[in-house]
Image (cartoon, rainbow, N blue to C red; front, side):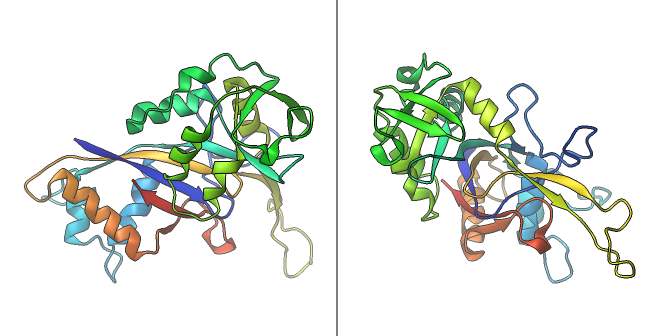
Length: 284
């Protein structure tokens, strides 16, 4: 099997819902249970990608069936497609910074996963041992006088770590021009603080629907919705098995060509009509 990294950079806030909740947030986003890191399920990504192969009647083309499988499981010729789509996890998350407006935070766990999944050499071991009040920053762009970084309401003491090579590698994952600023805005925090920020620093918006007759909120139409902010970098692993229809590399090349024909922009998750979920995507 051949695999490549599928980078997803949010241009607008993204909501892939986990269903209704009994907590303060009525409609939370999907997260890993053990780390609380937001995710995009592989089934959601596969559906979005497969839709690129729909014909004018919203039926999957023959090439799409070979890559993603038959869209009608009852069809006699139905079989699984060649492509294997993994879930996407947050790699870098934007957080307000007292200097430089905002920074992208990541952590050793997220970088180690990228090393494993993408075959990169990021020297993550050099970042081990960061305490909850410590961080490493790639440049002075977000560092205040006295060698501190302030993210949201938390202050971190900057440790001397070399992040330039890591930042350059991350920048190459995505083609979005905004993402290229990661080379000066990257901050590495501890795994604990990363989990805290990705859970507590997502956007929460109040959604309503107004009753046209009364001019007030319609019954049951007031709810709080959680959204992953714009400028968040996710990544997933996209794999392909070689078959007689297409080789593994050919299958992935066809996906890349289709994405390029779509301008490397996909809409993922809910609320497409109000501008949520538009992402710059890159297959590396």
